Length: 107
Image (cartoon, rainbow, N blue to C red; front, side, top):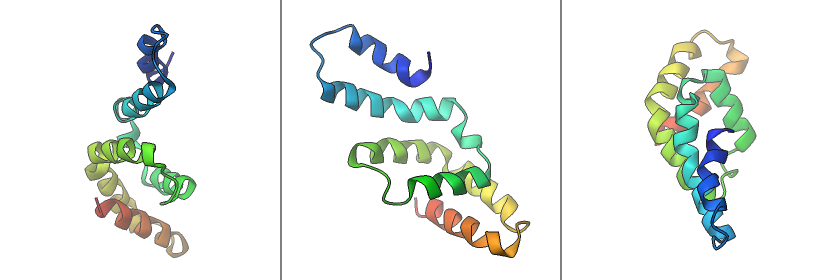
């Protein structure tokens, strides 16, 4: 059973919990689970791809705060990873890395 699932097990034992409580608990568990799983150590290209998939508008209201909390724990490492590779990527790919670096520097 993974971290996100384990966070919900205690709530599922109580039949009085509402869907909203489950949703709040699920989203609240994301930052710790992601950071503990090594999301901060992803490569620069992984972060470019994640932002491509999610997009700036891809975060829902309930997902925004956990995403920001996760990024807060990772931003220095993400920026360093991107800066370390940005000079060595081909020119046609550099723009993706520059945009991703700029995005993370906003926080």
